[in-house]
Image (cartoon, rainbow, N blue to C red; front, side, top):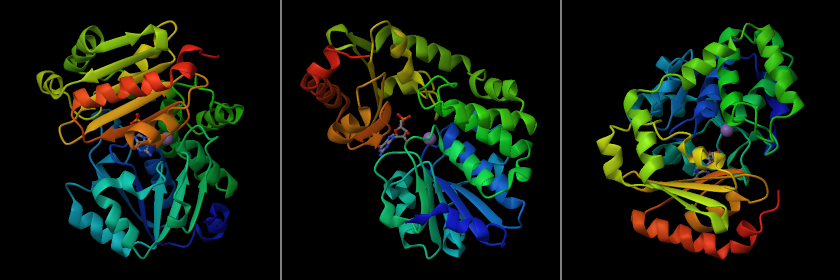
Length: 339
Ligand code: 5GP
Ligand code: MN
């Protein structure tokens, strides 16, 4: 993989560009894709943003979401864009399998794949150019760095600023995770100078719950959460019938895994959701417990040191049993927790 800086001199030659990200894009995935979209459009590129799947409604306020293709619903149009692309930016993921049904088309594409990502263990042989840096708070921070390092600060307009802020804010847990460096705060200061209205972004993302989502969260915390104090661990397991009963849609479960981490003493939180076709797992930790390794080892997943995910084709009960066995296997680390 060649350095991302090698494309800087080519940024202003109009090209056909595809920007894509991981399935079920979150704030960072969508924010970095649309931030880069609004930046590149200014140089006359023909840019198409493709999401492998649908996304949460609370991202729809971002400028440009109406133009994003959903690969599952607009497959033919998306395939045509992928096949024609000179450049394919891959943002906020680093293994092509994270694009689900798009994977095959992406790996066979003749366009140059460019990686911008902050997850562990990238498939670097799949990308011609790129940057992979696990120290970065977010992919939005990395897109910001690309804009600044290529000497294009003047091209950060309000749309770019809103999108990049949304991703850096959500991926840092509103600027509380250890990845929130001084550079992140400097980035936000620059975005403010460019017209960012940060309160509007927070409201759009966090104050748009429908009543059913709130009641669903209440139900889950009351009835689906188990605490294992001897392991400093909490587990939430959600059967499919709950998703149906509360009309849960994409995005409604986002952030749920973080709730138990606010309980005194809890250092590892896990959630398993029965999505029908698979059981989706999320893991979050505080401090020294490495959930990236944990997710890789037991749940065919990965991610970051303190935030990772995985999945399983086994039934919910079996996944819960597997989690409990994995927790017991890691007893020494979990029960003698070092801050
Ligand atoms: P989440 O729990 O919010 O789905 O994901 C947490 C982090 O782990 C995100 O950075 C996400 O990209 C990553 N992640 C989630 N699921 C998987 C997975 O199945 N495989 C890998 N490699 N990473 C994942
Ligand atoms: Mn991210």
